[in-house]
Length: 272
Length: 267
Image (cartoon, rainbow over all chains, first blue to last red; front, side, top):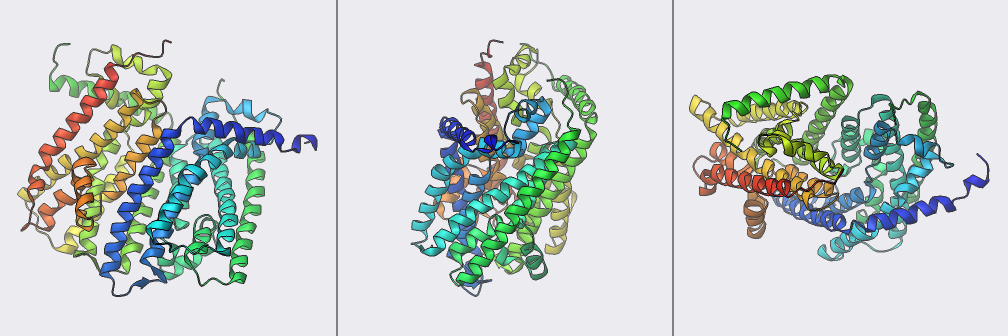
C-alpha cells in the first residue's frame, strides 16, 4: 500500500457520514437509554435486596454503590461498543456485498472501524454520557472525579479497540462458517461474562478470577470501570493496568489483521 | 375469509414445519453452531446466577434453590417464544424489503402463516436447561409431585409463556409504523432476563409496572407461587391465565392491524 493511501482523511469522511446516518435514527437512542434505565431499576432493587441480606455492607471489596456504578456503566459501555459488526459483516458475506468493500482503496479492517466510528461518536453522546451523569447524581456523587477520569477515558478507548478487534476476529470466522447468529451469540456471551459486564469480576470465585485476569476480555469492561469504583488503586497500578490493555490492543490489532488476510483467500461469494 | 377449523391449521402447520426443517438441513453447520451458541448463553446465564448468589444464602426470604426454581421456571416459560415465534425477528426485514406482501395473498390467517414459517430448533437447548434447573431445585426444596400438581405446572407454564410472546409480537409489530425498529425488539428482549427475579424486591411503583404495564412478573414469579408459597397465593396468580390470554390477544390485534395496513413497497 502506498504512503498516500495511508492518509487518514478519507477514513474520517466515513466517521462524518456515520454520524449523520446515526443521527437520523434518534429514536433508537432514546429507546436504548430507556432500556438502560429499566436495567438500572432492576439491578438497583436486585442488588439492594442482595446487600440487605448480607451481614456486611462491603462484599468482595465492593459496596452497594460501587456495584451499581460498575454494572450500570458496564451496560452503558456495552451500548457504546455494540455496533453489530459481526451481523453487518456476516450479512455482507452472505449477500456478496463485501466484495465491493474489499476492492475499495482502503484497508478493510481500518475501513470497517471507521465505517462504524460515527456510531461510536453518536452513542457516546446520546447514551453513554447521559447514563454516566445520571448514575453520578443517583449515587450522590459516589464516582470520584479526578485524575482517574483521564485513566478511565484512555482505558475506554483501548477497551473499545479491543472489543472491535474481537468482533472483527469473529466476523472473519464467519467467512468459514457462513453462520452468523450462533457465532455472534457465543462471542457476546463470552465477552460479556468474562469481562465482568454481567457480574463484577470482584465477585468471581478464586481460581476463575485469576484465569479471567489473563484474558483480554476483562480489559474491555473491568479495567475502565475499576478506575471509577476502586479508589485504592495506586498510580503505578493504574499505569500497569493501562499497559496491559495496550498490549492487548497491539496484539489483537495485528493478530486479527493477519487472520483476515489469510482467510480472505478462501472467501467464496455466491452470485452477487 | 371463511373460518377454517383447528385441524386444518394443525395440518398446515406441520406441512410448513417440514419445509422449514428441510431448508435448515441444507445449512447443517449453522444449525449446530446455533445450538452450541444457545448452550453457551444458558451456561453463562447460570454461571452469572451462581456467582451472584454463592455468597448469599438467601435474598429477601428467597432461598438459593427457590431462586433457582424461578430461574428454571422462567427459562421454560420463555421456551415457546423462542421455539415458535422466532420469525418475529425477521418481520421488519420482510416488511422493509417488500417481501412481506407474499404472506398477504394466502387464504389463511396472516399471523398464523407468518409465525409458523420458522420453528427455531435451537430453543431446545433452553428447554433442556430449564427442565434441569426446575427438576433439580424441585428436589432440593423437597416439593411434592402428583398428577394434579403436574397438571397445574403445565397450565402455569403454558399461560406464563403467553406474556413474553405478547411482548415480542407487539415489539415486532412496531416495524409496520417505524422503519428499522430492530432496537425496539432488542429493548423488549432484554426483559427476558429480568423475569427470573422475585417481584417482591421492587418498590410498589415498579411492582405495578412489572405486573400491569410490562407484565414480566407473570413469566415466573406469580405462577411459581402456586408451588413455592401454596399457603399465600395472591389473586393475581389465579387471574394470570386470563391476563395472559388478554395480553396475547391485544398483541395479536396490534400485529394484525399493522399487517392489514401494510401497503407494500411498490416492487
